[in-house]
Length: 342
Image 1: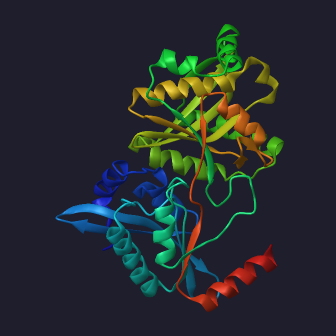
Image 2 (image 1 turned 90 degrees about the vertical axis):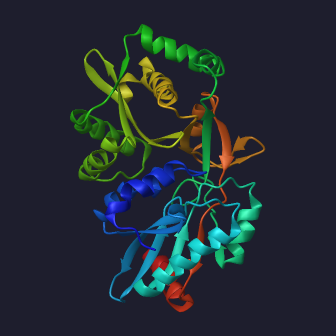
Image 3 (image 1 turned 180 degrees about the vertical axis):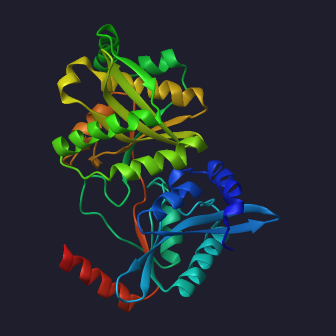
């Protein structure tokens, strides 16, 4: 069944309590993506009046051909040990694909790579592993991530950081850096810092209007938190976290290079972890890093691996990105067109 907006709270409550909760499967994430050309659908399975599985499915039209693509970011949301339920969710999405003219569905669930029974289940349902030749991030959403366990007491957690990281946190405080929760009024300065960081580190960044919409949709729901580091009255760094269920996810970070010597980023991460722990999170997800082999990063983002590991973060891989093809002919045409366009 498809849920209508009157069931948005029911859906979000289900996602919060799921095995792998994620803001990217929330109702509001669909509303955010609707502003960038996607059409959201929430497919849900109910048993005895309760939602037991489903997915936020984003639909993107393919120009000029009357067909579309489906994408369930970090979905579906389901008990992956319940094979019949997984099949039921997939069947519902297949039915929707027939109605909408979708040529394929892309998924990238945050399922740990060691859960090979899930891979077997997906391939049995016709999903194909897309593959990732790039050892950096590894997909539309990062396949390689680092996470810190927030369950220890703060003193024990801090003690688990590398000594240089603890020193830098203390140094930032001694030099007068302060961290506070940001407000919407801080967004312009944060975005200015983000543009500078993007230019410096050579990555793309969405429009300022996108960040405004994201803040307006997610912050009132408790799914987004902006933090800023302040030095002598000026915001010199900032981070955006997403939160769903027991996990806080670091998704955007920005800083002014001229103030790096004051170590604002180390203090930001520590204060954010303490905040996440105070609101009930048990895991802090640093998101994307380079793939590691025998404990060593092999991609260009190795510096991120080392920075994040200093906060007692542990490396992990997800099963990766999978496509379920509904129309093989159109899918081949689409893949060819993508390669031609680069």
